[in-house]
Length: 288
Image (cartoon, rainbow, N blue to C red; front, side, top):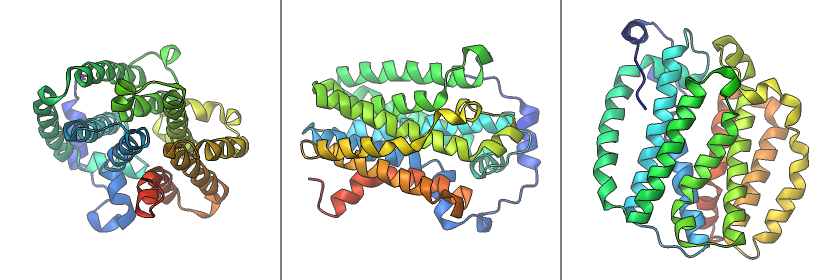
């Protein structure tokens, strides 16, 4: 999607003095501010879903998924940076400070991703194009649509993450358990986004970016998550992805229970890291 870029704003980012030198960033924040956490989560669950249902992944589909997720996240954060006068969240300050570097890197990665497209199978290419249209609609709807046309972006992110990570799965496998795993993963990703949105409510209000969950915080009581954790744990006896889903959801619940004691930026990183549970299970020998 092409947006008109305000050169004056871009110049302001370059010249603005921000207290965000490399030495100011804690070590655990780099994956987050470089937008590497989202591609890692997508690749992790692409592997988990495909492996759990015995679907073979092509190396090209894995590379493209990681690159495309990174492109989407960086485009979203760059555009946010262009709109926010003074960023308060860690990622937005970082993107404002290094906007020109990220624009150059984004263009290079975009060219690389386009060069890999011809190596996809026709089915994967068709599914990828459909997802690209959905992503373009998401970016337009979040950043350019009138307020009354806007949908809750947290649910949209969950849907796109699930469809993108599970593309190879739903192209080659059908069935109740396949669809249920994709729905559960979408809900897990949406829960992740909703928690972040609720935690960053004050910063978003000052930045003029209030999200839908922040307008309706009472609609998100997470205490009812325990029965779903139990259900997914039972389903894990049938398919391994449900074990990873239940543990990821349980970890989100634990972070929520202990959230008052944690730094906001650290919580923001942790809720993404718990989504890497399938790889942890593989390392522990519980996911084969």
